[in-house]
Length: 222
Image 1 (tube, rainbow, N blue to C red):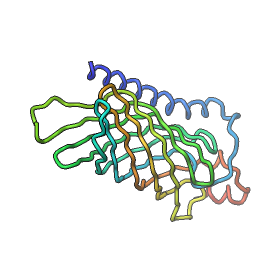
Image 2 (cartoon, rainbow, N blue to C red):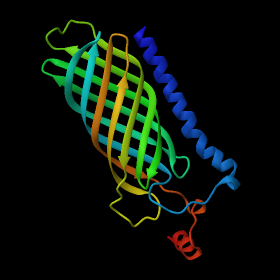
Image 3 (spheres, rainbow, N blue to C red):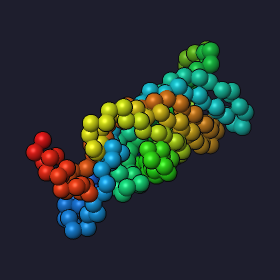
Image 4 (tube, rainbow, N blue to C red):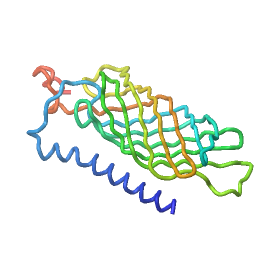
């Protein structure tokens, strides 16, 4: 039953991500007259980010706390800024923590949204598939325990662009903090992540940017 729920949730999340991410560029191509020119800035277009995190898990089993365990995690994020401040994408998480012989592994696949509150500073939120598995080395024959189902996260990030040669897009160093909730019937978990993403922003093409004529011509010649 848990395996079936896992497969169904994974399939739904992937299909939803494909629909959202695939529909955006098609809509722009079909209706170019609807494009609003934007001032050039680095945090524009599509993005792809790879993050390395310190991870802390707080788990409960049948109402009893199992304590706070420490580990590491990796996050992959991809998506697009749909407007100047609002973006949609997909987030994939992998992580593990431990306390002596006890271990927790965390996996997530979420539809992710972000809103830029201040310049380059954004709040993130998402919902999707969450998997939390617990194991104990003292009993290797024991059945896997954990939670499979919905997962929710909330986070904050800041994109720092060390290189300023591009008018739009470019490479960013992105410190980020996130909190993830994985609820379950017998096992529940809170996951806290602290780390840095390496992010690439594609930027916008010239025909979507509000550029002075001289600057637009110079960019077209490059």
